[in-house]
Image (cartoon, rainbow, N blue to C red; front, side, top):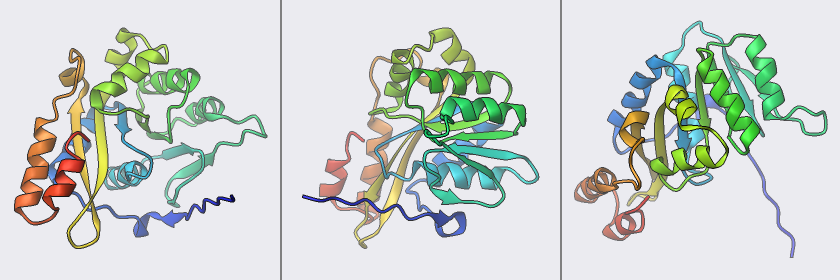
Length: 224
């Protein structure tokens, strides 16, 4: 059996995401003013990078934005975009170190995959940068657990992490998709052992009442 994956690189103008609740997007934009680390989680293909790019583009005017990705997923000429090159010995951590010398106003780090990248992202946030990144976790509380698994202490997490968001693309009745977003400031999640999905579920219930999604789809995405 043969398998092939084709990745289409879009320009940011072609990469738009509709949301069920735009207030959550505005909330992420507001807490970003505090700088620090903003972490998005959610399955592969859930539109996290698109959301981050659009947020940053709306927020910044003449500021210097640098992205470090593997690979670059969206073209944006206003950003300085660097791509990981393992053969050349330029991994996430190497490019973050290089990037810090350029003193960008905003960093977009494609994904935290290992302890070294996690540490580098934390250091970038602690040095006064606004840093957006993604990480694999099942829910917002899981983001904190994942950072701890990668060796980041509670103290550094509390000092560096400003906000955490979880995003899914939910199929709509008209055959399209909209993003469901749950966003929180770090302190709201810091002491939780498990995530409370009630607000998320209320959003799905509202989508059903507005005839945007079917009850079956709402049930499927009931827990993220």
